[in-house]
Image (cartoon, rainbow, N blue to C red; front, top):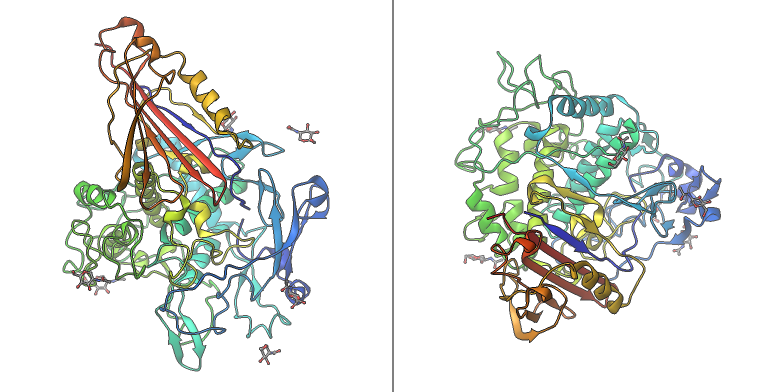
Length: 579
Ligand SMILES: *[C@@H]1O[C@H](CO)[C@@H](O)[C@H](O)[C@H]1NC(C)=O
Ligand SMILES: *[C@@H]1O[C@H](CO)[C@@H](O)[C@H](O)[C@H]1NC(C)=O
Ligand SMILES: *[C@@H]1O[C@H](CO)[C@@H](O)[C@H](O)[C@H]1NC(C)=O
Ligand SMILES: *[C@@H]1O[C@H](CO)[C@@H](O)[C@H](O)[C@H]1NC(C)=O
Ligand SMILES: *[C@@H]1O[C@H](CO)[C@@H](O)[C@H](O)[C@H]1NC(C)=O
Ligand SMILES: *[C@@H]1O[C@H](CO)[C@@H](O)[C@H](O)[C@H]1NC(C)=O
């Protein structure tokens, strides 16, 4: 089967990378509230002289927040990053990063103009050498001090409002542990008071985009550290698993022979120390990522009343069929929310929130019964990466099946930090949740198990706003194909329709097969500017030897968002099987 995906993303969203760039961790930077480091390529802030970007005021969203966090002005993460900085680099074209020195995800080259698509594969599909390389990269990241980033070891107030900076070096691996801690930590209210019902990356709509960006950044830091520009993180497909089949010394570490809470001494990670896994609330301070002891894991020793089994394929399928991304009140009590169900606070088969159970994503964390099981320290266990890559792939399947526009992601009334235009904590420069609510291919990556076998190709068109221009590309592409009787199918478009319009269009697709083509256009109720087209070129191809490379099925999705001035077209078609 040949699967071709064509996606045109026009006028792409602003992007840029990371936490407390070293260059901005000075009293001077904090006093000026400016984080616009010099790009070493030309010595100008944000690479301005080379046209990479410029130093700009951070413009905060004023959309109302949900009621979950009843305070203001008590947590450095409110209105991120404004407590620390009100000016950061804004990069243009294909550039991103704290000084615009990196390429956006999916681009490469000296000028960040070449497109690339990286494929994340199952850890079990890596060759022995590839798998060992991945493990070696993890170990290298754990040992190497981050060149670009430092972590904050005190709150802004503890830093004397910036006058006495408290930052320290951190390894590339532990930087990510710390960021995950920092985003999910409780609010210190002074004295012994803490507010626990706050999390800038979980229990709310930002869960999926935040972790998507987090993994991309992680992948990018490993690429930079190792010079292996094609490195991708592997995933662990845990559907229907009965045991932790990656928990062997060959992979992520087996069990210690005498202490079942520890890793086998022969595993790659047996000597790792964890950080940010302890209770920092009582110390009224921030985690400084110092070593706290060995990695803990005891897969299957968890509370079986809470998580009776690992998620099944049926659980995942049921979750994917949910049509709403998010539902009120957009936290862990939300019913019929795809996000809440995938995160694991709702029963995967009914989508009704159930605080007594941990399902899907949460089930894996609980199952590991160790470092993975506490939200704040969970990234200490490298299984976190493999697990979250798979969760991200389910998010990706949902995006492909339902084709939502940006407007589907809640703009207002989400818990603090989770509105569409909120900047994600703790990244600097700034990225909005909504920017990562887009198909993975627009961010330059895909999952091996989601790509159908064959010679697929992928095309992104940027910089044109003319829809006719896109159709020219589409028709040129399809002009090789012959006409066929087409049948409308609703495959993969599980979105409620307010109206359906059937059009017969003389699209070049299938034209030469001499049969008619049916075309369906509809606007979804949830999407103001939405428009989707679906085409199926069906029968009569297999018997025709000339049509061996012709589409058996073709789907064309077109989505236009006036708000973001973005047009996306996805075309998928499959080669007919040789009869
Ligand atoms: C940014 O912060 C600095 C230092 O507090 C202040 O002087 C400046 O007015 C602020 N700029 C904006 C746009 O808020
Ligand atoms: C990058 O852009 C510069 C300036 O436009 C140009 O001189 C150079 O050849 C470009 N490099 C590549 C690899 O495209
Ligand atoms: C920091 O700022 C707060 C609020 O503006 C103020 O109350 C406090 O005294 C300041 N602390 C220091 C050490 O400057
Ligand atoms: C990465 O992949 C590209 C395209 O396949 C190839 O040209 C390049 O040499 C690879 N880079 C490395 C470092 O292997
Ligand atoms: C491991 O599971 C037991 C219940 O079986 C539970 O009491 C304990 O808190 C869990 N440990 C961790 C670290 O999650
Ligand atoms: C979710 O559904 C359950 C069962 O119908 C109901 O008791 C609960 O109030 C609902 N929660 C929300 C937030 O609507």
